[in-house]
Image 1 (cartoon, rainbow, N blue to C red):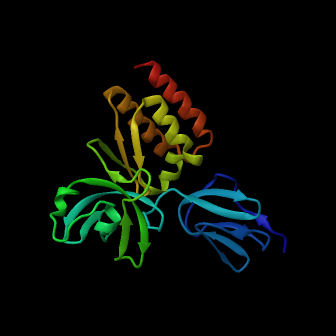
Image 2: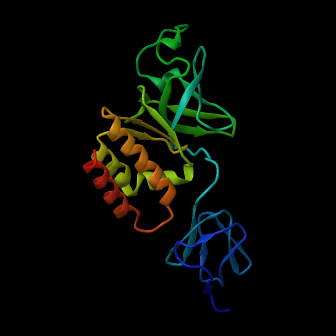
Image 3: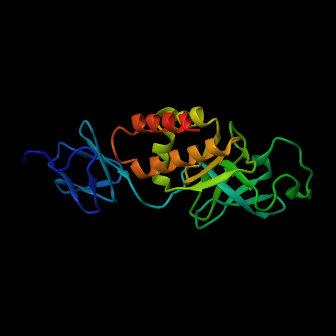
Length: 232
């Protein structure tokens, strides 16, 4: 049987849609093989790399993975650590040893270090099950976040917000002079000294979310930011 690609690069497809037939193509992210056909699992944008067909999901919940950076809120202070709400049905656990290298005496009031309603950026170090997720605050950029603006976007848009090797978020930082931290759970923390530049950064993030599936995004964002900066 002759293999045939049934969709085009960057085409938007729906769950159950046939993407290719024949055995020359291989199923990638968010796709599966059914006999001689490759089928879409989610709503997404088609990406063909050689023989590999994968989808860039356009919608769907965040699924925690080891190594992910996430932004969350302290919702419980215990004896040996803290519990963090990061948008998953179950809270993550941050132990004292994973929070700081400082010596903290047993029985100390941990709210002096991290208190209720504090926001932190942490890294997932263990996903034992849906209910048991451990995080750490030891590592570059991991910390308690100072007051700023929190923006919630779909987690599937985060790779486009970050860009290749951080290029997109780096460009927004350069043009707006804002401090920005991005959580792979779809939470972005942003802080700027100039309210107008801060709003430009927010507008840029919203534009990425709205246009992430359209080609030429980087050039459009550069033009948008230059125009916005000149208009301040």
